[in-house]
Image 1 (cartoon, rainbow, N blue to C red):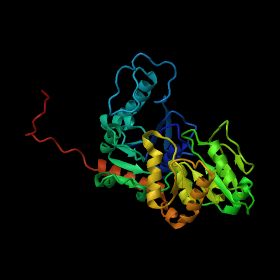
Image 2: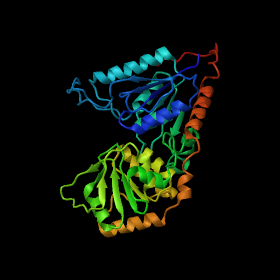
Image 3: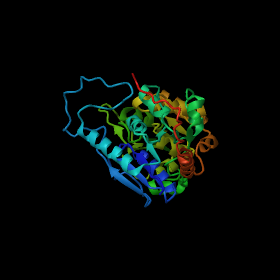
Image 4: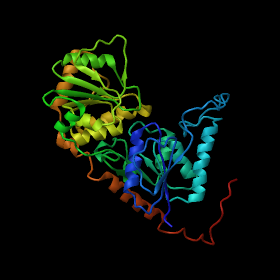
Length: 381
């Protein structure tokens, strides 16, 4: 019988679910895959060998939690481990019960350092999804150092400089993993979103992980370049003092972000992983502006993009018309489409599945050797 794989997915980001689905579709059909997630409605189509087990959220209270235990300190190896949460106990119980019953080959952990450490404690090998950011804290170090392998859903040229040889040696880089990499034709995409072929289109794109960009600075930007049509997709923070010109339009959440990226002459976006991979695949002039995330994830990703020469970056949206003019001019002048396309692998999901299978074979190809008669049992004093 083929050992199954487990996969924990953070339920707040559809990008995590799309990454999981891409790997599932590329895995051998004989390899069972059990996905643990607090939601089952965020996944694209999954193959028959994959199933979803819904677990309580590890991050969202329901009202049944004890409020009197906050005085107990959280150890540095944990990020989110509040006491007195029955939902967390239930989720961990479901996962550990599956460990016992399924005898899995591997557990893939997306986001949660706690789940990675749980797998290691339960003697289950794990692969940790590698994220940008300052991950030097004990919790992330434990998750990464105890992993059988690390999976980076981006190109190796976007690695952070402090990632040493030992860390890189067990990291598989998969640029474009989990992203629709089909490059849509500009004219066809413009027809789909209702934009004239001859208009200059500046697209502002914010991901789903935060509050989005502010309305006021975007208004300043649109006013500074009145000849262009500005369209925003995703969330925009409303500012009472914002005065917007007529050349900016907010379309909110859309299901066809790839059409908007393909139609754009220039893209302004935050630096979430899915967003980054979509823009790199489309090879568009790109002004990357990181939003706040835990561990400075988006800021460190912006640093990596800038160092690789694939995006112009600013720490925040420009605050004046001349600031906008400078940022846009630098974005067009520094555009390197061939360099951007080189960040995307040809078949990242298939390559990832092959790497996982090779890792599983390495982990389980040999049985544990018999204990030598001369071995002396260690007993702690």
